[in-house]
Length: 479
Ligand SMILES: Nc1nc2c(ncn2[C@@H]2O[C@H](COP(=O)(O)OP(=O)(O)OP(=O)(O)O)[C@@H](O)[C@H]2O)c(=O)[nH]1
Ligand SMILES: [Mg+2]
Image 1 (tube, protein in one colour):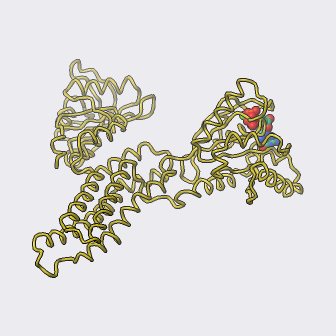
Image 2: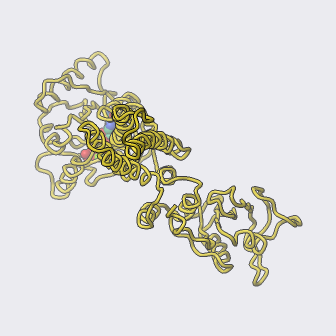
């Protein structure tokens, strides 16, 4: 493996927990000095001749220079190869606090460790063969994903779901390759392992669909991986900020009866059915705004270009549609994609018997304003009382997933993995078309070998230092 050359064997260390005050902080050390550091820096509460691997020991970190006790800690040694990096690993669990963690890290560095680069522990796990690159990328996904579904898919990927798919695909291609090689070496032989027709069948019916499925799952899972952005838009005073606050169960935005209260955008993150959703409250849209409101309204237009969905809020106490055209004009890119949900707010002020009629009226007006004659869905809510919100969440999920994968995905390929799969697909398509036109088996074999090469790139066999650098630099320190 070319990656052997990339392996370092010095000892690295980092603070593995987020910075800031907290309950527990961890300093992590990996490499040949981990065991010596345990002996030098850790003073166990009870006499300890030979520390065992994977045991938690209680005691103190002490500075060997002056014998000063630094903190009361729990220490674990995880000896190679049974550790995250497959090297000797020492973890010191201390009280959390930036100054204390830095002091312990400094002691470790003073005793021969080097500060780890971002992702270097996971990089060592990869270089030492514990995980492949698809799994390393799953670790990154796990530590950064906000949605529960993305995290679950990443965990599956870490346990090898993607790697198994790739291994099966590679196996299929190796069988095809073996058959072609027999045909190359013994052209006069009849009855090779597989006939050319069988190889073609394998490429078309097994390999190509599998690789296409992998490419497709990138697009299908985009919303689960990257999350969605939902804009709350409408005229001033319709209750946009109240809805934001209700969705996040917090007083994030100022609410007041004065129209034009919100002038800038206010963002908050929630999850809906396991999907990470960023909700953005915006300035009320009206004609003739003051200059500051106008800036806020301009922002709505810019956000609409990349948002996934708009909640178009109507006010049940005034359903005249005089200014709704202006609202729609600002979110035109979303209107074009029909990525809008009509929401009727303040229904707590509507008499029950008038409700159905009012909903019908709003639907008709929304259609007219949007210039469409489809059936429009309108969700009645009261942001103030918190009613109708679960129906609204369901409708949002339905709308967000209408152009995407309805079911949570099994695997979440990254962009890099998708590009490798696309190159593999191109090589396989070439191989299949060569076989069909009866080009020489040599040419087909070259294409299949290329295809295998792209799969190896995907799982990180023969990965270059540049590629690894690019991937692992996205990790946080201490991972
Ligand atoms: N009764 C009732 N009042 C509501 C409801 N939602 C909002 N309000 C009231 O409507 C007024 C305006 O609410 P906001 O949430 O500030 O409205 P907004 O759309 O953000 O307004 P701007 O930021 O000015 O565009 C406030 O007095 C709210 O208390 C609701 O569901 N029922
Ligand atoms: Mg507001």
